[in-house]
Image (cartoon, rainbow, N blue to C red; front, side):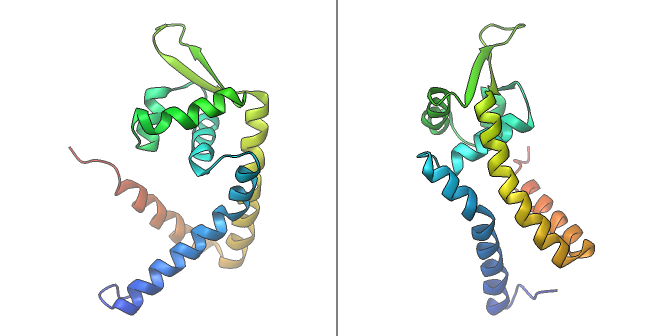
Length: 148
């Protein structure tokens, strides 16, 4: 276990996380850039793919951003016909988001590249390390959830 009271260990842990995240996002960033998009666009299509018919309000909560921060990238995805916004059948004021056929293909291509990398490094690291990695990332994610 790293001693996080030691500055060198702190830097080692943070550097590993930084370079790991950089490697994880590199190929997707290239693919996004070719379309004039960024990581925020990827997060939007990822969550819409993960949760079909996601409401705009639910997407805001998942991303932890304001309406203003979501407005431009979501509009771009709508204009590029990667995302559709449809009225809910139960509440016409509520907008539900879904990927178009092109949007689903795009999201799958981004995910496929990242999954290839994860498959390779997971195989190298082994099951125990992967389980530890999952536990750490789940704990990091939970640390962002507001406590009432």
